[in-house]
Length: 164
Length: 164
DNA sequence: GCCAGTTATTTGAAGCCTAAAGAAATTCAG
DNA sequence: CTGAATTTCTTTAGGCTTCAAATAACTGGC
Image (cartoon, rainbow over all chains, first blue to last red; front, side, top):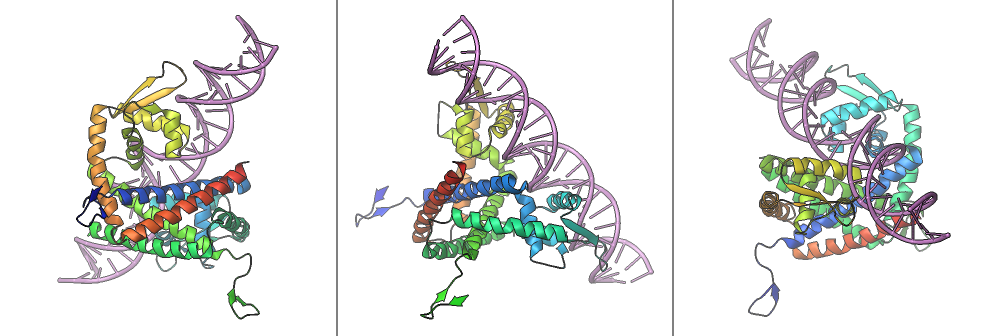
């Protein structure tokens, strides 16, 4: 810590401790909540979080979507989705077929049973999340949404800059 | 959406859409940043994020710590730490020994080489994080810290309530 | 001292995840 | 039409992760 000519607290130009602490806190929050959701899903429905997430993506689209779309939306690798889908088809939650217009493309959608199962889980899941965030008022929620949107944009810009 | 007698917008009592959206946004931010850090660590130092995280815990304590402490601090299972430590001892980054006062306890600490390696990585890591958050001003950072602290407390309370 | 309960760690089975390489289908320039 | 480039998906190797069961060591009451 340094004091400048007007006796105001000033940081060294290359001290990024606050950003590091912010990142760690963000990570801690997410890990905490994710762990909580994960164990409730297991305990209550004997389902894993990745499976729940995949079904959540599919619940939005009655006609199904491609594996690539799923992997983009879930932000995981293609290979990952292949295995995940395999197990969900096996367990009867998903239907899978090859697109007629492009035979490279695999389409998937929820089965009737899969959709019913998901809806049941999603209803409880919503209550868990509400409970987990229950100490935050509507203003806090709005403000967090805004700041996280800004964070996301900033991170995407940084990732984009590196990729190019 | 419903309008009440004073014509103000009011939500159904059991609609938690905002909390769900907040959680998804939080998760998206973390996943995005974590993925970015992960690939930079791999690209630049050929190291995984879990290994970096473990070394970060150990960098703070010159005399080492127990496996249990590491697993609590990293919020991962004991079994996970066992394997992680195994590989880091193998690669020469960690020393490991059995506590003299309690022979159940395994202690670990960074080797000299491990510490030097970590410090090098941490210095760059700090710049990456600063860059990733660079669109947020100091006020945004402070506000996010505050709201995430509140979120963490709320989530812990909820997890605590369920556990008991 | 002994035994029951607790704590620290390891092991094993299953699943999740990535990066990289490969296979198959499509697209497009020439 | 042909062949190179691209896209979609799968496979492989390695590592991470959890949960649950097993092992080993400690603790406290008797």
